[in-house]
Image 1 (cartoon, helix red, strand yellow):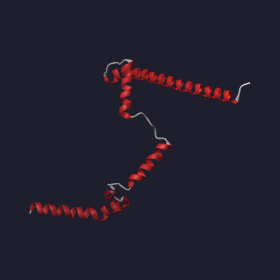
Image 2 (tube, rainbow, N blue to C red; image 1 turned 60 degrees about the vertical axis):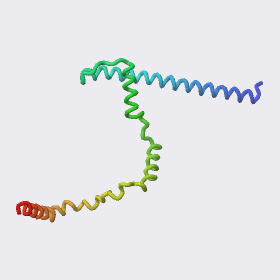
Image 3 (cartoon, helix red, strand yellow; image 1 turned 180 degrees about the vertical axis):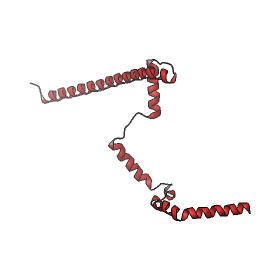
Image 4 (tube, rainbow, N blue to C red; image 1 turned 135 degrees about the vertical axis):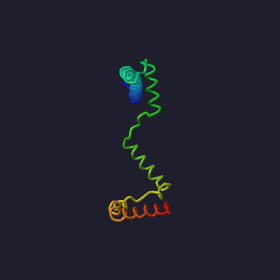
Length: 139
């Protein structure tokens, strides 16, 4: 009969073996996905780019290089999950009091009367302004 210590050690060993196996499978899956995506990029490039833009065909390793370069330039797609939205909101709250552009912002609610003003007074005021400028330039 096994003692409690032996049972605990056996469960612990099984847990760590399972964990190591799981990590190994994720690593293998990641490698397979990278190779598959590289192959897809190569096939798409060789199918589209020579005909559309007159570019040369590429091999697999160049396709992986292009993919890596595009990921470096455009990001790795961290996503915009709920946690990222919360972090952005918190960051905005922290730095909103230091907003240097706040005094320059315009209250656009006042602009709703602009069209009506221009119809009633603006057009006549503009004509008077033009007439004054013409008299100064001609005088």
